Structures are given as structure tokens and as C-alpha cells.
Length: 285
Image (cartoon, rainbow, N blue to C red; front, side, top):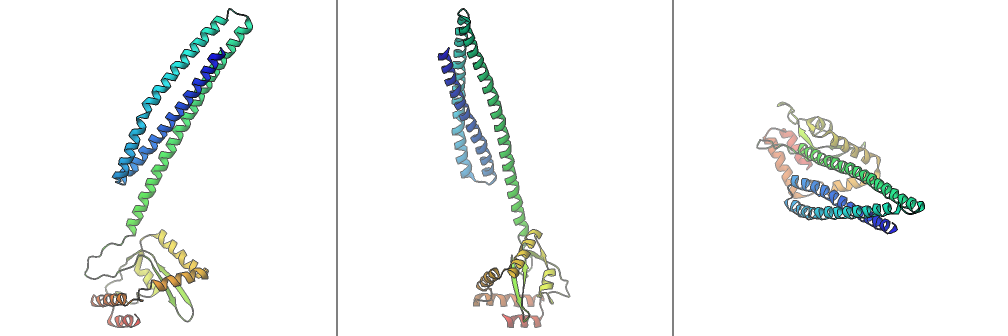
């Protein structure tokens, strides 16, 4: 009986190890299939090909493990049958021998039942994990799509006119007077309509510029407004912003000055600004 017990313990341990290998491969298959789906959506043909080859290689291992489990089950069944036969023969021996054999048989049945419950729990846990991973992948895809849509919204539409007012994606301005400095930030915006009579008259003031430009993304506008607060509250940050602004100043190079003057000329010719405003702006460059 003890010989059969040792053999059964060994077989059960071997089966558990094989089942865990099978479960790991199943998890890998689900993960790779999800990665293939993402690669296909991203049109990553090279990545999809590599993942497909890896998936095929793993799938070839599944039949081998299934066959191995079935073989172990047959061995377990044979050993248990042999055990039962031995127990049956022991019934003709003294009661203590019969009781010991029956105890071993009960232990085997209890272990088998415990193993079955453990397998059911592991399977339920695996299903729950798989469902969670799929939900996370779906959430990542939706987040990526939302981000791409946000980028599309931020992009500026092309105006169908010979000359048009060009607006930078993010424009950070410092107005400096005798009273002090005042910072204004212009987020990615659409150019609003001012009416044919008003055109750009007075539009270059900070207050009217805000009404002239319509923000494309309220979330980004709110974030950039926080940049103004940080600049005013943190002297170190203000110094870094000032230095960066000096380096990025579009009026520092002759080539850009020429381009700006050319643009002002075109705006004047299109009647966006008056001759007087053109002269004032031209002198300040």
C-alpha cells in the first residue's frame, strides 16, 4: 500500500506541474492574441508577423501537454485500481491491516477531491485575470483613440485665402510696463470673426486678443492658465521662462524679422490692419 501511495503522490505532483505549464501557455496565448490585435490596428505588420510566429510555436506545445496529462491520468487510474485490489485482498487479514488500508484509500479520495477543488479555484482565478486583462487592453485602446481625437481637434484648419493670419500653437506673452510685468498665454485657438469694419483694429491688445481667438481645447487652456500662475508665484520658474523666451524670441534673427515684416505687409494689403498700425508695428520690430 505504501508503495502505491508514493507512486500516487509522485503522479499527482507531476500532473499539477503539467497543468500549470498548460495554464501558463494558455495565458501567453491570450496575451499574444491581444498584442496581435493591437499590432493589426496599428498596422504594424512586422510586429504582427513576429507575434503570430510566436503564437503558432506555443500552440504546438498544447497537444503535447494534453497528451502528457492523459497519460498521467491513466497511470493514476491504474495505480488506484491496484491499490483498491490490494485493499480488497487485505480485507481477509486482521482488522488493523484492513483499517490501515481503508484509511489510505480515504486519504487518496480526499486528496483527489482537494485537488479537484484546487483546480476549479485556479481555473476561476485564471478566467477572472483574463477578463481583467482584456478590459485593461480595451481601456488602453479607447484612451489612445481619445488622445488621437484630441490631437486632431487641436490641429489648425487651412484657410482658403491668399493671405491669412497665422497663429502659433502656444503663445506665451510678457507685457512689461513701469508698473510691472503681466503674463498672458494663448492656447491652440481658432481665429474668430471680428466683422468687416473692425478687422484687427485694437486686436493686438491682450484683452481683445483673447476675444479674437477661440480656444480649441478648454482642458489645454486651463492647463496653460496654470502656467501663468506658476510664473507669477515662483521667481525661479519665472527666470527660467524668461530665459527660454529670450532664446526663442522670433525677433532675434534678421531672417525672421524680414519674414515678419513681409507678413505685416501682406496683412496691410489685405486690409487686416491699417497703414498707421502697419507703420507702428514695423517700427517696433
